[in-house]
Length: 85
Image (tube, one colour):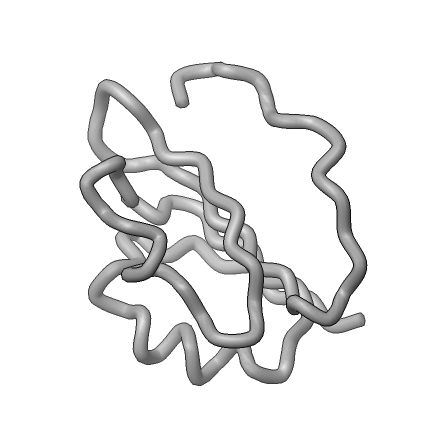
């Protein structure tokens, strides 16, 4: 299993590059996505991956995205606490 993590400092304008870079990985974690509820999952989606996201609410910045290869058998077992998100 290959994993990749990065701090995007706003991912939306970098989606094309992200889609290209993550094709060799099974799990990709993105910190500081800066995604908000106004950004649809379709704008952040990557073919072949399931997307899990946690946007920061109430202030700018923050946010987490996790992409998991859709061929991996996974099950979400818990949600992170509500510490400012």
